[in-house]
Length: 148
Image 1 (tube, rainbow, N blue to C red):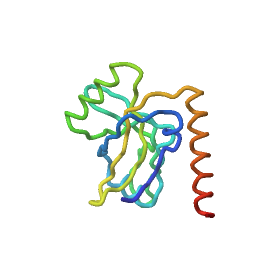
Image 2: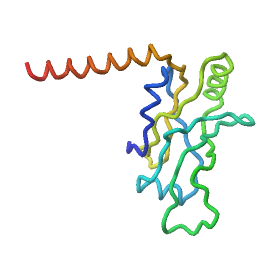
Image 3: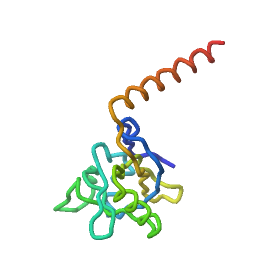
Image 4: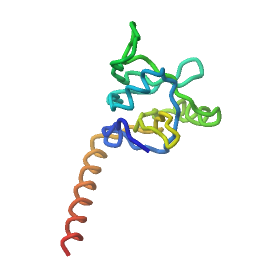
C-alpha cells in the first residue's frame, strides 16, 4: 500500500466512527499523475448526488506527457462502493450530525487507486483540546519508556 495523500486534519476535526474503502473513477493520465505523487485531498469532501458518491475539491495535477487539452485538476470524481455500504452511509448521514470525510488516498496492492473515507461526527472545541492533550501525553509516555 503506497499512500498518495492524507487528510491529517480529518482526525483532528472529526471523530471517525467507521472507515470504508472506496474505489475511484479516474482517467489514465490522472493515474499516471498520481504515481508521481501529485495529488491532494486536503479540503476535499464527499457529496451524494443522484444515488452516487462524489469526491469534490480534490486536486490531481495534470500529467506532463498527457494530451488532455481541457483538463480540470479539481473536478468531481465518482467513488465506487457496494450498494450495502452506500445504504449504510446514507442512512447514517440522514440520521443527522454525521458526514463522510476522505482520510487517505492510496494505491492498493493490485495497483488500483483507493480512497479511505470515514463516517464521522464533528468535534467541538473542548474535544479538540482533549485530543491534543492525549496526543502530547502519548509522546511523553513513549519518551519515558524509551529512556528507561
